[in-house]
Image (cartoon, rainbow, N blue to C red; front, top):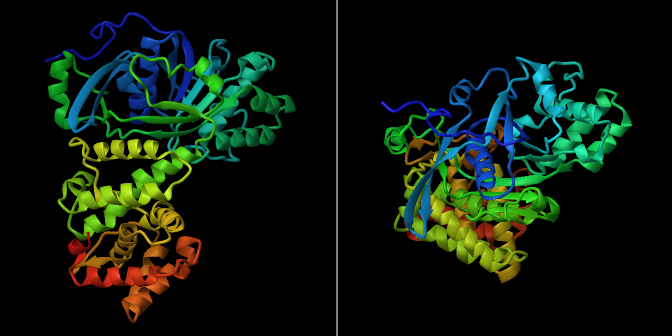
Length: 478
């Protein structure tokens, strides 16, 4: 049996100077952020070790047992060819447990070299709680813990402008860093901290909004023994993820002077941009739009996963044509070359044989997703071309049919707001015809935040598609 990974087994003798505080040690941070830092340490002069903070009670027992080492296993389809690679990650120096020893946590703030703060505490992590107090050891919420850490740093270094930090959260909420900064300032007011602290936060700390993208399923149970054999050691923290990665960081270009993601031998898809909004729109309209378009059609055709949808003789080409011929033309403020490059990467990711992404899982809260991911492309295409996009309209009709809640005599296990599901059931049961149903659904401002029934020809096209789907002709529409 192979030996368990350790610094001796992995032949890792050095630790980098501790310049990073990281909140969270889950699969995403280890398989993305720590992987990026590890590459920067090896290929540039970044030279930064991570102090990994457990933001919730408990410990990282497995990580401690492996001297904070772990391995990434990345796989993906690139230009039609499946590739895989492993990397021993040595960017984490140690773990810090605020709930076990709060003084060690506060000592981080007094370390002069600390410069970066990364986090991923889930979307629910960036919240304000008035129950958090300044003298809690520690405060419960992540923003309160960070506020306390930054206040300790501000106090210890007497407001020194050079001791501010670069805060780069990766939680999946829009304007994540701006929201985090806002909450820290709320705590400053709640705790009655001196006004200089708020000024120091605003002027001498860089809060960077981000948009991150990499699918990281976690421990690759099915392939673990094969991978261990190739590595020559056993790693119970082996983290699998796709090769594709994207990290959009909204910040001044001077960030590159300290975070040199443009100086690696291996190109990293990490961009420092003035405005992340266009990149968010690309992701929502192309990647998420492709998902939300294939979900209702795929489920009605009996298809289970994204990869199966892309391999389907009719649905696969339909989704590619939907993206290239309808979604991309609906976006005018981003270059067509960039959009097409992104689309190609998306379809490579969809075909990854090691990622089994279920359509039913993606269907969660489809009502809000269709509003954000499909409707804007319909409207943009109509504005640019003066006609309705046939494939996107069919996807919209298929969503409405899916939300009838049953198909071919069986119930569909929909997962959405109960009020939305009840509304659709009533709309279907109360409609006299498909035309009546289409008008009712499209006119719902509660669903769409506008009356879509006023768009010329849309209700008629949706009702035609609904009739054809009900008549068993969905495959013929593709």
